[in-house]
Length: 207
Image (cartoon, rainbow, N blue to C red; front, side, top):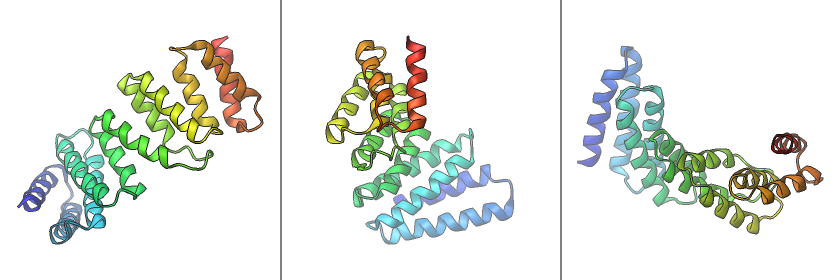
């Protein structure tokens, strides 16, 4: 019953936002197929993920239309199910975090991005750091950011990008420590050249 109601709700919303009959029919058929798979295999993480992906796509497509809330909620539901069934799937978690941002839920987005950052093992890999920092700024919770960044630097000390974010976050809490970290990054041979330029510009701005 739950999946049938979700399908009906999705189709009803599609009818309102879609102005091209052929496109609308294609999208409706695709979502019907996806939801049928979920109904037949509710414990299949891939089926749940595909449903979440479909709803996330629709939520992005409708822009500011009120139906975005419906699609966003359904995307969150199915991606949550997929993440519970397969918690090691980073692609699912990435989409779940993006859905949380779209749904104006920075707390959940930060939780998911923290999991993803916590799994990174290459200090050159920083794809989740910027959205996580944005969530902390959105939440206006620098203390949470500082605590998490310190925990990750204990796990992987040589992580220049994360060190810089820690320094930026510390500027309003402990300016002295923030500048100390920046000077260290500016003089370290392990700091990537592009980041080193950013660090030096920040030091000049704070001097």
